[in-house]
Length: 176
Image (tube, rainbow, N blue to C red; front, side, top):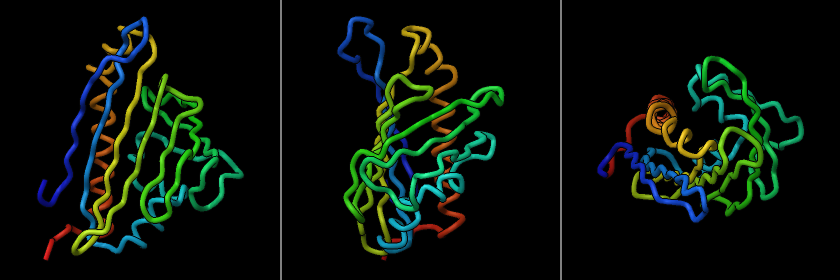
């Protein structure tokens, strides 16, 4: 990838008797800001709504989550991914390496499993931001059907929105 973002989605079979699938998303975006500025923005839960489509109805409802990511941090949200129906979602920040990466994992919410890695690397003229998400949808083969007709497109739309929101905030990356 040269300048923009790339999203790849892969599927592999999970190791369980139901043989339902674990899906993955990989995105990269280059941003013309310092590593410190990127980390300050993306490691603050208060900024999540700024990079999430309004139609998702994303709202942080936890009161004691703190202002920066730290291991063990619990963040509670409501989201409205389908027909405006609010869903409860709780994530835990399980790993943090200051200025390099953090990982959030769903504890309660719409997925059977959600593991989201956020990586930040200084590059010439800015930062490479990389997301790696592994997720599993409930309901066995019905969840696999939902992946094809709804979930994959919705997640793609969320990451596309975020890509554009980042470009609007900081501009287009131009390597030297």
